[in-house]
Image (cartoon, protein in one colour):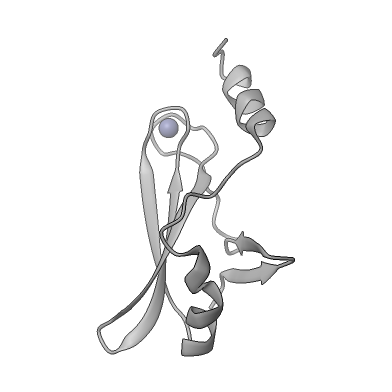
Length: 99
Ligand SMILES: [Zn+2]
């Protein structure tokens, strides 16, 4: 698995593969992690990782197979909105000409 999905100091840490640039294909803004969803389907555990563009609203979901132990570790973060530093989001929108 090229994705790094872990819990550090009670916080969810998601790192996409190095070859994967998370840029919106419609407006070329940076995509931000929106939420993850841990599920058991098709006979195994997986996590859906959703990124969303704060500028135009485009959303992309990556489906990554994970072992059961990882699923248990990530379960508490499943279906919860990922909080972002408001300043970071505001600065990105500002750099695109908002405000
Ligand atoms: Zn966009």
